[in-house]
Length: 274
Image (cartoon, rainbow, N blue to C red; front, side):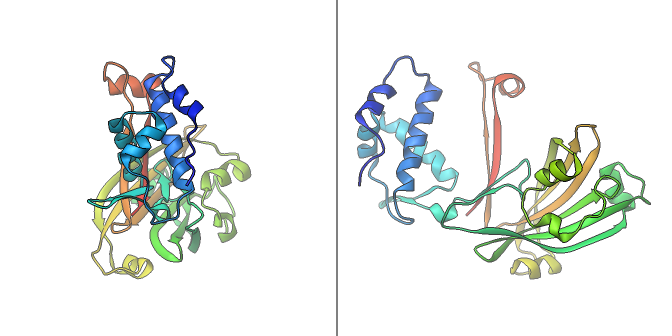
């Protein structure tokens, strides 16, 4: 098998002008390119061989592999090696965990709308949407299927005066933010979430095909738009046997994460199909 790393790449990796971040990104990209050439379930070359091909320290390569394992691209079997787990590499951005799935060629994902109905907001949902209990909302229930298997449920509550005349056809795609922007001129500018451990109830167990009281992630999402209006409140259930929650937070050179997040750092989280 031909490695995606060339001699010139190895030289450039040792370029003193490269920052550590650039070197780590180069190694990551090279490993991802290599993974794309290997069949699902087959093994990667040994760490020593990868280190030589990449022109990087073995420990550096191991750290990069560990991150790709955490992200679901690979799996390690003690005593046997590191194997491609491409069919497991399906992720959901936590900014909109149900809506933005990235699926490789080995898996397919789809959203099915089970119900869409207008109803009174009520006190509980009204509090979250900042609406009077007598206001009208559109409730949308969707299920996410991966390779035909139900893995997540979401219940969206949308103010009817902001999103009038919604139908099931509006929700054939995952990306509801794109729907809001293109058809209602609503741009989501902030999304806040709360995640907690939960168990599925009887109705959820039937939709997800798991026993009652099976473990799950319960995630609530509240979105505001460019006019500082609350435009969506969503409650999502993720099968506990299918998902892991993965988070990476950047820091500045002094290890100050709060400074990094507010200025030049990053925070990235997503769910991973396991």
